[in-house]
Length: 382
Image (cartoon, rainbow, N blue to C red; front, side, top):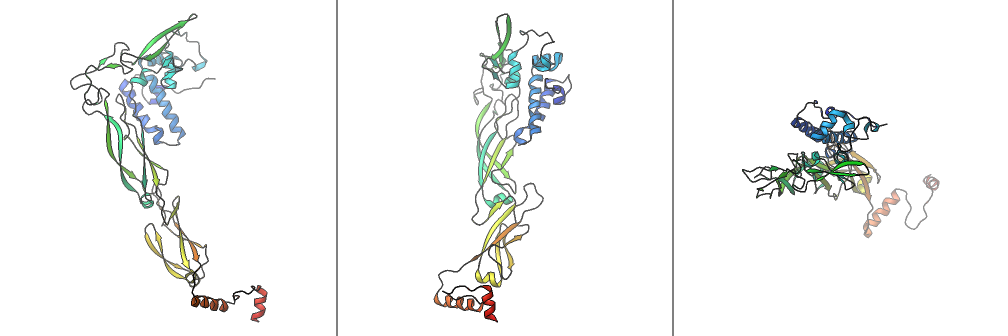
């Protein structure tokens, strides 16, 4: 059973009598709202983006829209509704347009893309860049500047590609569509396919006086210094998306986006797990046994902490609110401090004697003696 599709006018939220400009405006709005780069991992947004693309593919093309208005989805998709029943002549149907609308420009080398793909507004290519920031910059946010090579709309011709005071001529070969129809036949069948127009090279227009600044391309390469705002709490491997900072669009389409990947330098003292900061505090045997007031480093600076007497190595305590801020606000994580008791080494004779005296006072065995059991110690004390 064929898949049931929504009405294309309903998809874009316009009426059946909508003008080309209204259709284009509605499509741009949906494309920006549901673009995959702005909705990573969102399958529903991805589906709506594809649905909007398909609707615009049909409604922005005069011939396709006419067939759709007359026959519905079956007029532009021969497989819709099981096929047949509408009396189509293969010569009247442009298979290149049909396949191009689903496969985006060429199928099996014989079918070219539709004119909507070629001459309609096209969003510019999204660009990617990477930056490296410090542990603290990731925690509290920062601003970074990067040099970006991108295409921008030519300021002299405003994207038209024409020298000032001139305009482009609509290609008479393809009538501005950017594609030409090629009729093929054999074995009693006749059908047409489409291919890029060789006269205008698929642009749909002939520029007799190209703009000197861009050579008729409508865009120029430039190096731009971009300021990137890194939000507080960003983690290693995450990215920041800057809408409209990618390459310039074509035919009035919006510019692409800039996706900035973030790498965080390791910290010499701290480790991070999400919004949690981990730190290892070394203490002496005396500090662990008697207790001490410690100064613990945090990403906010040093804080005082009273270490209880008799603390064992491996003990972990928490400093509330001293971790990483939550990426979208709403609080901070904690810092966990693990105590490591450092065993003294390289003792001199006096220090060794003091430790022997301490061991004796604690009822411990002298050097070289076999350790006594708990019951033997109890018997000796009695």
